[in-house]
Length: 126
Image (cartoon, rainbow, N blue to C red):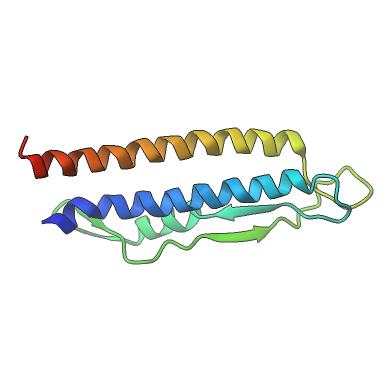
């Protein structure tokens, strides 16, 4: 029974890990905005989670995700650089991604706190 209560939290925890790593990678990109030849990096997680959810099995109205939900850091080799030094970091784009990721992270924290609140209510019997 307790495992069923905790199952959604596992996906939230993986999403939280991805958001934390994404924050670190975006910060790293911003710190290297003036480094010649630096190629920006990004975190891929949602793509893997979405494909897992599409391939998941549904039983009794509940979705069971089979895979591990990989979190990957990939280097962006797209040549969006308008600079001669080969650096493809756009500081405005990275700042916008950082703000969006902060909102995502805070939302995930609130959802996890809500899950713990439900568990506390069950334990207290209210």
